[in-house]
Image (cartoon, rainbow, N blue to C red):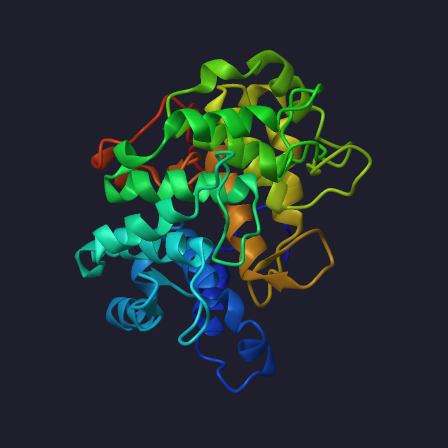
Length: 327
């Protein structure tokens, strides 16, 4: 099959199959990513207008089975340790499924706030690993829960700003090199907090635009290979800065489509590699921001359906490319 279009039906079938192969060793080896994978799959399906392809009640019950009553948070799988990442994925899933009422919100808010360190950064869990990813996750989750007002915004912004480098990008901790994934989380967190004023948007936009390689794909940092997942992370930041036109959108669209498996569905990190739900989600998310025909709008700040974020009054001033009509 030619790889010049998005094979929506194949991708829907691929995502549905992931929860059905419970006898597959890979299913059990990826238990620590299960909550995230459900979020990736549900979001991708929603953007492709097939949200109901997965059983809503079964999904909600699985999410609630990962609740850790002692911590007041969610783990990635039943009886796994709670973590801020799986907690955000649970909140996002339940929000998309209109089931956030199932969450003990005050306890989750307490869990999230307890992870903020004196420096302003957030840890992922009680073991203390810190990363600007976790700061974004905290900001995102508190915003979705309607409790952003309880966050120490100044300390949060201060740490993110301390992770800014001379090239305009951001690292995961102070002194770490700039990386597209960290740029996404830092820019998105600052957008939610209405503090984009603290960054040099022109310099950062230039650094992001330079992530595009001759084959159209985007990389995470200089001298690295292209990868479909950066199609979202770079585009999200560019959309938030209203600078998506700074890259060649046609070449990036062609690169994402070239990484599909047209027979069995799914999208890989790059053409010829094995597909997975992570790259399938971020590839489709990137295509949505590029205005690919037939897709729903994706909010680049929350990485959720734009209509849902707008209905909650949380939309920020981002700009994706206009939705194109099919030829």
